[in-house]
Length: 88
Image 1: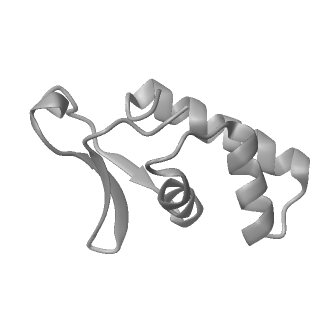
Image 2: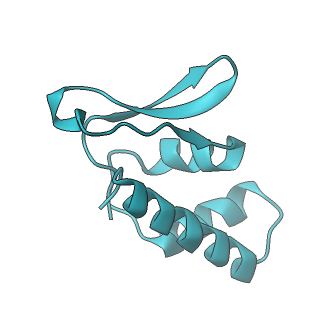
Image 3: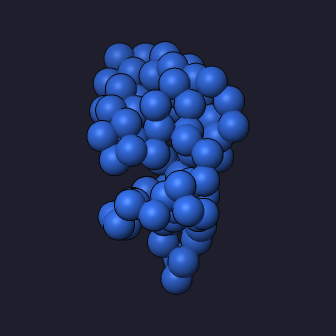
């Protein structure tokens, strides 16, 4: 999977928010807010092809989390990004 072009992570008033930029994102009328770890993952995978397994490995490198929990969280986050239309 990959983050779609035109979506950028911004920090607004201390909150990590994904915003759509450009005409291609004209129908993106949702506000996608990310917590610290999700924002960090976004920064790590943006512009690259990645899998939930890649995201889980990154989580394990940065945080004290088991492989099972990391994969479970990564899959949930990846599904959320696809559902929100910011990744494919």
